[in-house]
Image (cartoon, rainbow, N blue to C red; front, side):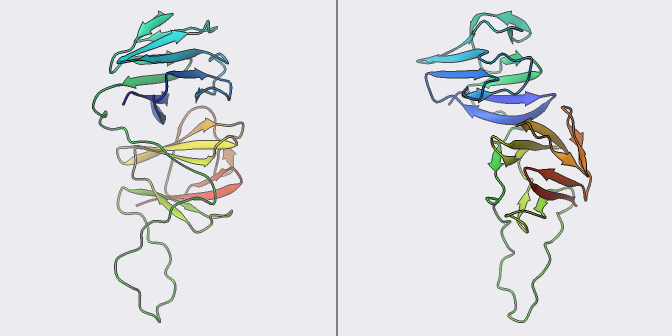
Length: 222
C-alpha cells in the first residue's frame, strides 16, 4: 500500500497510509495530513490516487511544493520520491517497506501500554518490585505523574510519539544508541528538565524529565 513518511530536520514524526482517493496536506487542522509549520499553506497540496497512479498536486501554495528538489504543480510520484513543504520532507513509498522506518506509535496520557512482565509468577510474599532499568543501549519512557503514572513504554521503534493529539504531541526518535526529542504538533512545546524545547530536536540523557500535556515522564536509557 502506498504511504508517506513525514520527517522534519531528519527526524521521522509520522507515517501516513494512502487509503483514499484524495489525501489533503496543509497547516489547517481539517487536512488529512496536518503539517504544523508557518511555511506551509493552510491547504498546501493534495495526493490523488487513480488506479496504480499517485499524483501530487500543488494547491496554489504560497511557498510551493517540491519533488526531489524541483518545484512542481502536478507530478506523478514514484517510489522513493521526496516531497518538500517548508522544513518538512515527505518520502513517498510504494513498494516494499523501507528499512529503518517503523510505524509511529501514538498514545495519550492514561492509555499507555504496560511493558510485559517477566515470565513466571512472583512469590506471594515478595514485595512489589521497582521497574527494571532499561537494557544496555535501550530506552524507556516512565510516566511519573498524571492518570498513567507508573506505566512504561519501551522505545523499541525508530519513532515513538507521545502526548495528546490536538493538544501537544512530541516524538522520540532512536538514532543508533542515542535518542532525540522533538515537537510534532500542538501549541504546547515539550519541556525538558523544566525548559521548553524549540523547533530543533534535542538529545536525551538518562534521567531526563519530560513535561508534556500535563504529564511528567522520565527518560531512562541503559
